[in-house]
Length: 236
Image (spheres, one colour):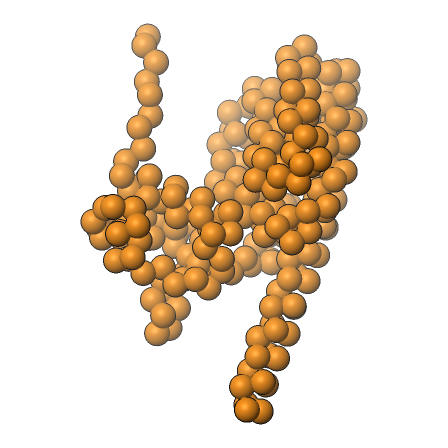
């Protein structure tokens, strides 16, 4: 049977472009998203932009703001915490199944680890995020469980945004992640399901603690800055 190439619709392409700019920080939280400006920037009509924004609203990336129209939504700390709780269970299961079902294929993950370490050494935030996600998607594929891949797919863009927001201000926060990836891969290659699952769950639990804490710090700093600006305006 010939392979089928998926070609995104125009709405899908616009959605992906806006989403990429949100995840890489080009469009930070609370940025107004004006349909006419986006349509001109992407050289399309307003209709696909409107439909793309509706999709992104449903996914929690944009929101309606009183008197401002549509804006980039702020990261919800409780959603971040909940997303990592789901990932801890799914990643642990994926690691266990990978060790049981595909230990011989796991060695190919060393190339992802090499690229990830290089990205950390270079301070390349976008590459760090891409390779981190690539590693976990690789393990999901090794699990040979399509339901795990389907369940995790909606979260990858949220993970990109979460990691991006933190790593852009604290590039060293992810420096030990690749040591943990190596340990997980060693357990999978070694056909040790119990250790693989334990390390996989610990890895996500540590990531959750780091990223939730950092995002809470960023939110407090932003509120303090806003309060100080408001006070300065009143004193003038």
